Amino acid sequence: MILERQFDVWAVGSGYAGAVSARALAEKGKRVLVLERRNHIGGNAYDRLDEAGVLIHQYGPHIFHTNNKAVFDFLSRFTQWRDYQHRVAANLPDGSGRPGWRLQYPVPFNLTSLETAFGPKQGKQLAERLIAAYGAERKVTILELRQNGDPDISALADYVYEHVFVHYTMKQWGQTPEEIDPATTARVPVFLSRDDRYFQDTWQGMPLEGYTKMFQRMLDHPNIEVRLNTDARPLLAEAGCPVIYTGQADELFDFKFGPLPYRTLDFRFETWRDRTDPRQPYPDEAHPLRGGDFFQTHGTVNYTVDEEFTRITEFKHLTGQNLPGVTTIVKEYSRAYTGGAGEIPYYAIINEANNALYAKYRAEAEKYPNLHLLGRLAEYKYYNMDAIAARALELAERL
Ligand code: FAD
Ligand code: UDP
Image 1 (tube, rainbow, N blue to C red):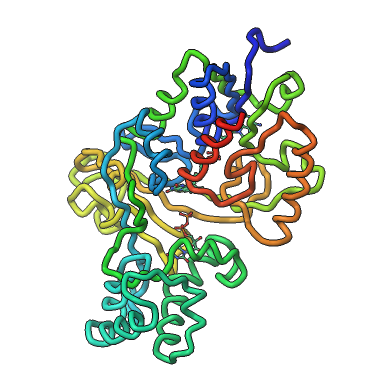
Image 2: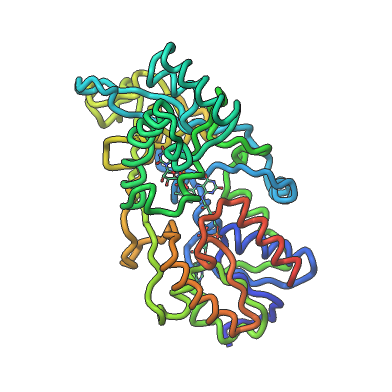
């Protein structure tokens, strides 16, 4: 017997799925054991200070946004928020062929992007055409826009497809926008608006002291015990109570039907210092901090046509951290997940074949009435943080 105490529920994983359900159940009087394989809580939302003192997101940039008031209210009990509206720019060659001459405009592609790409006159004409076809302030997916029969709109759709979607999607998924789940590119529609925010949700922001602090407070409850560095799988036979499993469904069943495909990411973090700082490791010409405090203009810049990475995020824009003369950025490189040591499956690859494979694991899980699969990995879905939190609250209610 590894467990000295009796628990009413086990939560495997301490990301949004595990931590939110643990807290909600603990408040209903259930004694909850949280088992976490990593040496920290928070799942992929985990953040920490790096060597330069910059608050970074170890598993890629996370921006909270939701229209779900219950979720926002629940999380707000464990954190205050920094009001942050995420803005993303596409950065691409300007088409002149001159090395280093680049364009930058808002993503989602909007009326401002249109004018930057086509100039004020043609941009305005095209905007009028689009608004006549779809209505002002409307969001139109790239695949929908490409169906339009109007030759001018169709030419515009081809431009956006080529300059914003196809190369970025190839880098991220190794497939074209037509080949991947249409819901994925629909996350970033063309927006017939001047609103240049990445999300239009009612509640958006960053936890004032970071995600990890928020998770610490959430899991700080007399009915919750957290064990880090513990793979739950060898222990599950001992549970004797409901188990909320938030890890991979294929791994849980020893890949008996074959591995589920995922994309993984390599994150390359770089710390940049003001050129007057003697620790500045780069020659001035290479790419200094330009004597200022920031590496780039936006929280995230998407390299939509060239470069091997998909995007660069600069954390200080997100967190509002005041650190003069130093900044940390992260570049994301996407590739196929192989299951190798240390690799993390970040994105389920949603398509018919993979959904069918997942359904086999799901059916297997259903043979165990005490087993509940919850979360981005366990459900093999492309969920944002708020969606997982909402599902965790629902499951806690049901249990
Ligand atoms: P996870 O966070 O993956 O947590 C699962 C936990 O379970 C992990 O800690 C893992 O170690 C643990 N675990 C797994 N198996 C076992 C086991 N056998 N034993 C013990 N522990 C185990 N969403 C947004 O809303 N906004 C964003 O800006 C955003 N940005 C993102 C950027 C990237 C690069 C990625 C990959 C995702 C992003 N997301 C974003 C999505 C967000 O990360 C997920 O919605 C969220 O992390 C899902 O939480 P989860 O608990 O399901 O999974
Ligand atoms: N996408 C794109 N170009 C962009 C931004 C997004 O082609 O500049 C596509 C790409 O296929 C991506 C998807 O839209 O995977 C969803 O983008 P999102 O920013 O929501 O991805 P995430 O932040 O979840 O990685």
